[in-house]
Image (cartoon, rainbow, N blue to C red; front, top):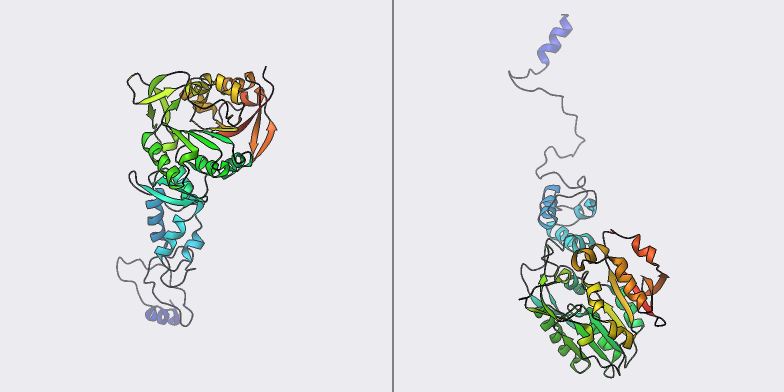
Length: 360
């Protein structure tokens, strides 16, 4: 070793025995922090002082969604919040939380009915319901479908709402048909039916609305309401036959709906039970000839009714109806039998419009 090398070795600090010397730290620019006193920021220290850390945001995300932030999380926007409270509000108000998480994180842990002002009416909603009631609170529930119904109703008309739920269609239709018109609503769940009646009364519509606390089927019998695994979605419940059940199931043909006041528009959404309802409604359809807006979900029809979606389609054709897709709030392209057969196992329901034609 040369003299110069010996001098350099003496001047270089030596690591203590067992220590990890590691690479030498890079020099910091003048005025830079020499130590970090807070956890790592969510997006490269993009937020203002006090803004939430990645660890804090992950904890909130897990609490609300059940998993940490992922590729769909707007991390930069959340990290730019002034504090974790503001970031949490952003998540709660996000489209993703409002719709994707509402099935697992109800707004209220049990049934909690409150009155809301939405769609220009007073309507009682259940805070435990993460679907219809949640949508009502944001004035965003089947707006296009309701728009179709309202487009075809005039003062003095009659509307039939099968599967009325909390009354999104019933109340807006009652306003549209006015005191000279009438709305008939079918809702089998006793608690929901009672609150629907309360909403009707609170809007001053009692004189133009009739509510039936029954389920519709092929004939008179008893049944029960099955919730399936959608505990925060009362609207997804469906009727099952049970000889000692608490729910009355009856045919639409047996309900006291006057023939002299034809139903102009009928909306139907009963979670796959539609083909069985149609079996008890042939007389009604021959007399009233309403425009029909109905949901069609082949998978639910097979499970709930034990029927096929093509059979449901055929029921309308046999009554002289022409079936179309609903496109926005308008009557869309015509559907044929083969079109329905081709959607045997689609993952979500869609809506069809059935227009009355010439009776066969």
